[in-house]
Length: 316
Image (cartoon, rainbow, N blue to C red):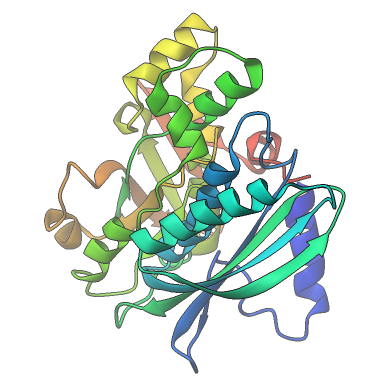
């Protein structure tokens, strides 16, 4: 993957790359979290399949999802907007109406940004959050014996993207999952209130299997998942059946579900609502060759580096 290749170059070039790894950086001297995501026209969105209003909502929500994975309270964002010179005023007003509505829902303020010209529309958002617990969340904190939990459902956004890009019918919940994702801020707050140690958390923006693999590598632990416990919307299964798609591949690799992957001990799990935080597996031995195994009715598929590179989302 070119993204990982470029990240290695960046890490090797910077004199201090200690903040690079998780999707959010915690600045302990300021006691804040900072994250930054960019949406590029025809790479991350198409104006043929989304409205400026929904695009504004999504641009903010994907950043709030990163703050949720850090268990942070979202506070402020800046928005940088690049666009062609013939862009209509209505596009800008509707985009910022979407931005404003999400910010109001989560008590976030827009504090600045930048506007430039470009050949395509590019929306770049920086989000700032406040630490919400004396403990921290990172993809590197998974421990042997932790249960693996997820919020929400998987494969729904990918099915929505397929329907929109292929001009096929899909139920509204599938379409909305792709165009108007919900950052799991409320779920993160529930976690923050009960954890008694550092825990592993990551959002699944590039797919559930992608997140599992990255948590396994960062924590140097192996993870075993029961695919039958992975929540999948029945409408997604039906959509895939009608359109000859593999719903299992969408659930594991589809991406843009913006759900949380969480690893916590049994005691913490016992305090959580099982209807919100669903157990799909367990963290196994720490070793020098961490792996992820997806068990599907007794058939185990191991996610190797090759499988990861072939299936994970390519930003290039």
